[in-house]
Length: 430
Image (cartoon, rainbow, N blue to C red; front, top):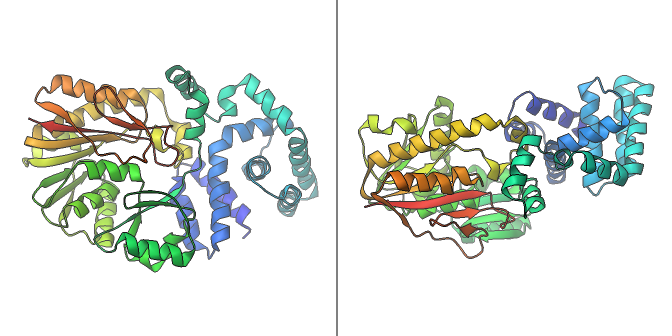
C-alpha cells in the first residue's frame, strides 16, 4: 500500500482515540520501511496532527463540504507537505490527484487537484485571513487553551506557542547497567548519526534509526528525555536507600533510579493500572533491572501498604503541557475542568508520600507541564501545610535551559529548545 494511504488510516485511528506513538510504532513494525521512508512518515503524520485546525480551516475556505474522511485526510497530508515541508509541490499535487482518482474516479481527482492548486496559489493571503479572524486556529490550539496561554504569557506568547508546536528530537539514554556512553558513541559513529545535544548520558540525535539496531533490542540504551532523567537523577538514590517510584509507568525514571542504586537496595514501583504494571515489568526485564518490584496501587493510598521509604520520586499525573510536541493529538481533548481534578490528585499524592517518607528522607516532586498551578503553586502549598519539609538544592547541568522559581524549583520551559517542558523540586524531611 502507498505510504500516504497508510498514513490516512493512521491519522483516522488517532481521531478514534488511539495514541499516536502506539499507532505509528505498530505501523513501523509491520512494514519494512527504509530510514528515509520512516522519517517521511513520521514528519507527515505528526505534522498533520500538530497543524490539524489550521489545515482544516484552509480546506474550509476552498470547499463547501468534504464528506469522505479519506479525502479530508489526503487534503490535510498534501497541504501540510505544500506549506510546511520542502517538497516537490507539483509532485505532491499530482500524487494526491492520482490517489483520489484511483479510489473515487476522475471527477474527484479533479476536485482534489483544484483545491490543492488554489491553496498553493493563495497561501499567504489565506493564512493571513485565518490569522486575522482566529489566531487560535492559525496556531492550531483550542480557543480556551489559546486564551489561557495568552493570559499567562502576554509577553512571550508567540515563543510559547511555537515551543509547544515544535518538532521534538529523538533522545536516547545509555543504560549503564548494560553499556557505556563510549560504546554508544562508537555506535553513533558507525551509523553516521550526529548528536544535536547531550545531557549527561542522554543523547538527542539527528535520526531515530537506532530504534532498529540490535543494541536497542538488547537494552543497551533506551528512549528517554533528559528532563525525566534529571528528575530521577536528582532524587540522589544510593544502594543503601529504600526507594519508591510513586507513579512509575512506563518505567523510564525507574530505570534511572536502579542505575543510581547500582542494581542494589530496595526499589518499589507503583501504578494503578494492571496493563501499565505489565509495561513496567517489561522495562525491568529489557534493561536488566534486578532490584525493583512493581505493584498495582494508587499513590494516594500509600499509607495503607505499611512500608516507609528513605527516598520517593513523585512524578505526578499532570496536564502534560510540556510534552504536547510529542503527543499533539492530546491537545484537542484537554478540558478546563480536568485541570482542577488533576491538582487535587497531585496534592493527595504529595500528602501520601510525605506520610510514608522517613525523617531525613528526600521527596522529589516533578511534572511534565509548564503551568504554575501544578508546579510552583502546588509545591508552595505543600510546604505551607508540611512545616517539617524544606527545599533542597538541585543539580541542573549548565546546558539545560529554564530557570529557578522563587521557592527553589526548576522549570524547563520555552527557554529550552530541545528538552521536554518539565518541573522539578527537591524536598527534604527534617
